[in-house]
Amino acid sequence: MFKTNDYWEEEFIEVDEKKLDSIYFDNCTFTKCDFSKASFRDCKFTECTFINCDLSLSKLISSTFNDVIFEKCKLIGISWSTCQEPFDVKFDSCNLSQNSFHLLDLRKMHFINSLIRDTGFEECNLESAVFKDCNLEQTVFISNNLQKANFETSKNYLIDPKYNDIKKAQFSLPEALSFLSLLPIKIK
Image (cartoon, rainbow, N blue to C red; front, side, top):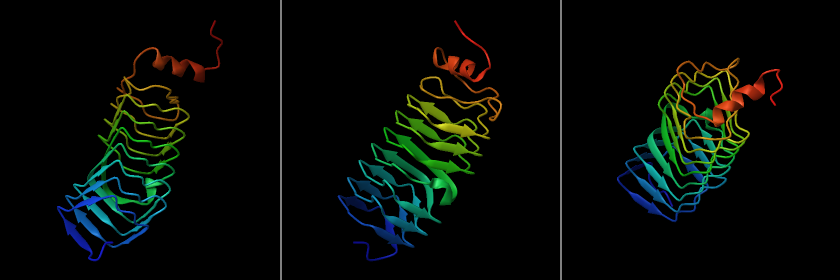
């Protein structure tokens, strides 16, 4: 499908590709594409948008995502930790179940109306990140900078303040009561 290594302002619809190597995409749109179980090696995506795409179980090897938007995408079982910086992504109405974000700079990242189930955020900088209307069931936060992060409209999070910096982070009731479950107390 991809015959050159450089695409600019292209629109790709219903592409089914499993191996992408050293391709640069600038200001491209991908709609209803199937990249499930694909290998992305040394690819660069700049100002791109993915709409209704499936990238589940894809391998992201030394690839860059800069100013990229994922809308209504299926992104299950992805390790974003092998991506190169800059890493600037917005997720809107996506399924991010069983993902791994490890050692990434996710400052000001936007997660909107997404299912983020059984996902790991370890040693990330999530300062001023926004989790708007997200379900964070069984998601783990370990050793992260969550300063000024916004969880006000999200649910099912369990964030241990002993292992995360939550200064000035925003939470709302009743979800913020989850902090009490981490204390060695009985609530009646």
